[in-house]
Amino acid sequence: MATVREGRRSVLLVVDVQKGVMAEAWDAERVVANVARTVERARSTGVPVVWVQHNDEELPRNTEPWELALEPGPGEVVVHKNFNSSFEDTTLEDELAKIGATSITLAGAATNWCIRATAYGALDRGYDLTLVSDAHTTGGFELASGKRVEAEDIVTELNVVMQWVTYPGRTSRTATSDAIDFST
Image (cartoon, rainbow, N blue to C red; front, top):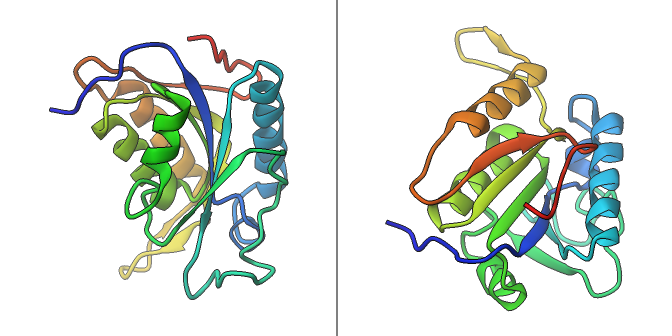
């Protein structure tokens, strides 16, 4: 069983809101605006914002698609990753420990890959989790059978799952960018 984190120290984790990711994502303009609103709410309440930036062959470091679509503020940490989970083979856990984080509010992309993997990674590591229900997105895709899975359905499914998934001693929930309460 994971160590359940004691205390009430929130952090906003913004995952892969990068130009190349958002260029192909469903309803990207609205989602980026909601991520920006959530970032401003965090900053205005003194909640640290940690940014995660993905590197791979589709998002090579120091190219335009790799660049963040929103600008981190002064002193805000940027963690670089190469895998779906923001925790795997990164400095994220060290950065969260420096902050004393016990609760993660999660926003970004891509819902079915990096957001899902990071959400479960956070819960597995003992953090409480709030998924910003209107501040994550992905692209749709076609299965080998020819059936298409629409991005909006993927987003909806993860929002439902994060309201119902349970872990001992931890909370998992969703809230909109307008309803986020960083004090809980």
